[in-house]
Length: 391
View 1 (tube, one colour):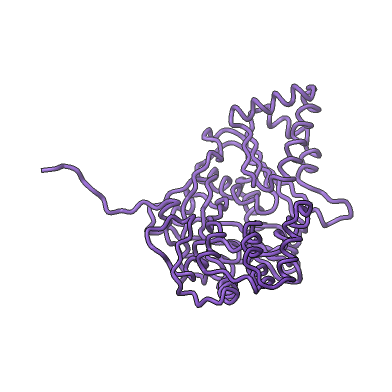
View 2 (tube, one colour):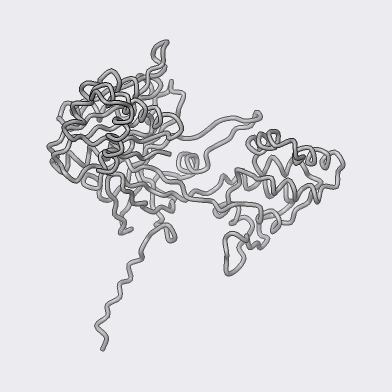
């Protein structure tokens, strides 16, 4: 008789996501803000999923049904047609509608679709336009065209080029999950994951555009009823295990998310190390994310110090790196005492600017050459005292 015991508990991960309820969706930014930042609560009950402060939540979105309907109309399809998109490696076909709604990305077209349309275009004017876009000396024009148009726009612009559903889906990429930094600690919320999400809405060519996943959560997922496929993405980013260590956190905009988790975590664990937070956004009145919570943490001692930078509240723009420079001496004192420093947010500009400010502060306050400051930062990274979660 075998002593081998099997459990029927499914393991939820990227390949087998848990279908979770969103139980809260509230606006964090105020009415006058230029941004739409929302707080979501995802229910983990029944998932067996565990997370830690610093981890991310992967969310699989669905495309907007209106975009799917527009593609079907352009293709002259009804949606029931069987397709086997090559990149999905399916064992059996699925319907065109399912492929377009939940499996394939309808944005970020490539030049491949234009080459296919050129081969099939029956109208001379359409052929001429496609040839112009694909000409060897028209690379800039082509890049701009692909950035400003989605598949629906392209199909609508070249109606004489008839594609079958299968031909069309073979041009599309897989619809990928989006990762969001978790804004809660499992010590405080073991059965929930909180997210801080900037909802993407903008306009190109007089046509509204939307972030696929952010509007999926904000607009198309009714609270308490619709199920969202999710998984936990574990990270090396996280607060120090040594609870006596001081922590400096720099997270403007939605970069604040993991630091809400860090502070909750350290308070719940009884950490004795101090917590210093740098936060920035456009306007104090409209963009101070979790203001009441931070005020409470300052009073209760969960937060030792809070420095804020508001870029649009005065003529000269002020950013988190400016606030770091203003407090250079104190920052250096914390670093010399062994503080860990964390940065979360935009990789292109903010993280680079913060890194440059950090090098400057270390050089100036420590009386070091630029090369010595670089070595100091390298050692901090090696010791995992300087960590970044940037995107």
